[in-house]
Structure formats: structure tokens, C-alpha cells
Length: 77
Length: 556
Image 1: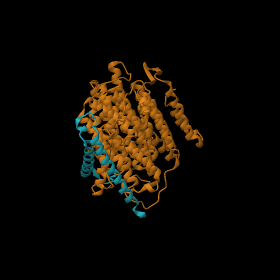
Image 2 (image 1 turned 90 degrees about the vertical axis):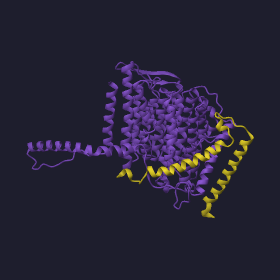
Image 3 (image 1 turned 120 degrees about the horizontal axis):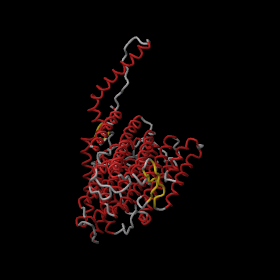
Image 4 (image 1 turned 180 degrees about the vertical axis):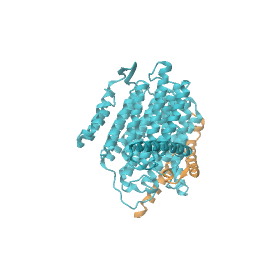
């Protein structure tokens, strides 16, 4: 159990986040959010936007490594 | 007394103060300087010299919030660096903060130029105090770029005096050629896209305390200068939007966590630049509020990484992880900073960023609005998750580490309290903004919208980690815009420069030979190397040529 501390925390944290996420979606159905642009008012739009953006950033970043990544001592040579 | 001058005087006297009293003296100088905040608005000190009327101390509604936060940041830096006995760094830090505060109160371009150069010349010693070979090289590049910004400002200011006979710090636009020079000078220090290389190059090279000082002043001084001279300049909206978006991708793959924070700093500046570009009262308030809270939470994040560097000896993500067990307080403070920068409701980032987003919405700039919305998810990725995750969690740590020293914890604690305090009671922050504020950040619409964005982004992170799609950290260098002057230009210039230096060397040796021959002391003609090609040296040469050309074009 001693070495599994981090894994247990991660599990609790994931459950907590999923619960909050679910709650936020439920709230979205019960109220009508006012925003500056119609797009943002669509139910669940910020949620989907956030999820997609995050995945996009990570994937694009990963691909960028092919172009931008050099060895650690690149500038020292 | 000009604000900040006490601090500069104290920095000069520091070596002769007994070492027990050095830190208290530093705090005292900040306190004395901060008394000027009570003077209210107006012009307090002018000086006539060489036919120029210099305004040395002018204060108004835009100066005040920056002056408050600069003093506060100076205090935090001193507390955080209480253990630091590096005399050069202490002197440089105090003089640097003092110069930045002095610059805020300059009322004309000539005195602004003097302070502008003073911040450059003092801060370079902070980078030097990093005390490694790479820090020293980085400091030379930093100096070249910062001085370049100063020279551009001087060119712009002198052309302005030449053409209009006026050197007051007033609104400018890009239709005049001096406006362009001054814009570029500010743009370098504000780390515009492609002018940003120096920031990510030098900040992570400094000492744990040095980076905190650096992160607070230079760039925010540039934001202040832009807000004063170029509000409502439309191109700033696009420049700012690009600034918020592109560092996000670099931050994902960067391994050094302090460099990740430097990219994040760049992204935050983008939000402020957008606010200046819109130029309405609401958006300028947003920019100032954002600069205010940003200095605190960015300092907090740099402090937490500095504490890690102090105890572990590295901030490379590939070598960290699992520190939560040994540095629990640092972990908590870091998470507070991370939540503030990610703009969680009840944290300071939320109440400031909302102003800029509302200004954008009010203007109907839908594309920019969603670029900044996207960038908000990006902030969460690199500063909100990556920094705390890789430093404190990620995997269990085998070797023990001590918690940060008390003074570091105290500085972090104060900063964390401020982050939460401003987030919960935004009205105190709003009351010092340049324009009257009638704004309520905590509406249910806004809270739900922002929380959805953030929580689902965290969900995306958990999802990516679960399926092993999140990129692991690799020891590497990530190319940035400093590549142009660190690799490309020297690559082109070296053959040319080698030939040139060869010819000069030959001439020198010949002269030396003839000289020695005339003294009758030498028998042989020996080749002596007088010139060595170095990248900073070459960069300086190229810069001088570029500036010379610019001046030539401007005069014609």
C-alpha cells in the first residue's frame, strides 16, 4: 500500500473531476448561459471546446518535436 | 524623491552596510520608496537640462497600479532571497527593481530611455549571477538584445524631437516613422512573436531568486509603456493573439520547467497586449488588472520552481517527480499559483482575464475571442497541469529532499494569499485600476462556462495519461526564435568573419613584428591571434549594422 500512494490519489482525483464534470453538464441543462457569442451559449460548448483544444495542443506539440527538438547540447557545439 | 531612487541608493550603499543589516536595509529602501505612492497624481519633479525639459516624476491613474505591484514584487523578491548572500545579485536586484519603478514615473521619452537602459544594465547582472558557463553566454545575448531595444527607443525619441520638437510621453501611432521605432523598442521587451527569443533564453539560466526578480519587471514595464503610448493600435490585437497561442505548443514539449514558465509568461503577455490593442476603458483596465495579478502568480510559480531548484538542483521535468511527499507546502503554493494562472473562479487570474474577454466580446471580435479561449486551455495545460504534475507528482521519488527554507515558504505564502485574496475580493483590485469599474466577474454564466472549459480540459489530460498518449519528458533543446541569432546568423557570418579576422590579424602581427624589430627584441615573425569569433560578438556586430542601416533609412 505504501508505494501505491500516488496511484490511489490519482484515482480519487479522477473520480472527483469526473463528478464535477458531470455536475457542470447537468447545470448547463438547467440554466441558460448568456455569452457574447451564440456559439458559446450552446449547451456543453465550453466543455467540448476545452477537451478538444487540450487534445489538439498535446498532439500538435508532439508533432512539433519532429521539427523543433534537438539534442540537449545543441547550442554548445 | 523620485520613486525607486531610494532603492538605487541603497543598492550602491549595500557593500558598506554590515551584513546583518543588508536585507533589512533592502526592505527599508523599498518601504521608503513606496511612501511616494501616497503622493497622489500630478507632476512632482522636472529638470531642465541642455534645453530639454525632463519630467522625472509624473504619476497618474495608469502609473499607480504598476507602481503598487512593482513595490510589492520587490518585497516578495527580497523575502524570497533572504538567504542569498551573492552580493552582485543583491545589488543588481535592488537597483533593477528601483530602475523599473523609476521608469514608470518618467514623463518623457528621454528620461524613459535612461531608466529603460538602467533596467537592462542592472538585470544583466542577475542573469550573470546564474554563474554557469551557459548563464554567462546567455547574459551576453540578453545584454545585446536589451541594449538594442534601448537604442531603438533612443532613435525613435531623437527622431520625434527632431520632427515634432516634442519629447513628452504621449499617445503615438504607427503612421509616423518614429512611432515604428518606439513600437519596436517596446515590442522587444514585451517579447512580441519572433522578438521573444531572449526571454526563454535568459530567464531559466538565472539563479532561483534571480528568475523571480526578472519575471516581474522588464516585460511588465514594456506592457505599461505600450499601454501609455499605443492604446487602441489595432495591429496589437493580432500580435497579442498570436502571442497567446504559439508559446502554448512550445511549452508542451519543453523539458526545463522554468523555461516552460517563461513560455507561459510570453503567453500571458499576449492577453495584456490584446487588451492594449482594443484600447477601450474596459480592456485597458483588463490589461492593468492582468499585469497586476500576473506578476504575483507568475512570481509564485517561479518561486516554487526556484525552491525545487534550490533543493533538488534541477528543474528538468525528466529528472523530477514525486516531490509532494517531501515539499508539501511548496506543492500547495505551486498549485495555488497554477490555479490562479489557469483562471479558476475564486483565484486572481479569473477576475482579471474576464475583463479582457468581456472587452473582446463587447467589440464583437469573435475570432480573437476564441483564440484567447483556446489559449486559456493552453495555459491550463502548461502552467496549470504540466508544472505541478511533473515536479511534484508523476511518479514516486526514491531519494529524500528537504522542504524549502522558511523565507522562501514565507514569500510563497504571501503570494499565494494575495492570489486567493484578490480572487475572492476583486473590488480592492478594481478600485486602483485606471478607469472606474462597474464589473461583476462572478456571474453564474461566466463561472459555469469557465469551469466547463477547465474541468473538461483536465478530463482530457486524465484521458491522455490513462491511454499513455501524454508526451513523456525527453531531455532536449527546443528551438525558439533565438535560433536565428544563435545558429543561423553565425552560420552565415562565420566564414565571412573568419576571413576578415584573418586579414586583421595579419596586419596586427605585421605591426607587432615591425614594432618589436625596431626594438631589436625579436627574431621571428609569429602569428598572434588578436580576434576570436564568438556568437555574441558576431551578433553584436550584425546588430550594429542593422541599427546603422535603420538610422540611415530613417534620415533619408
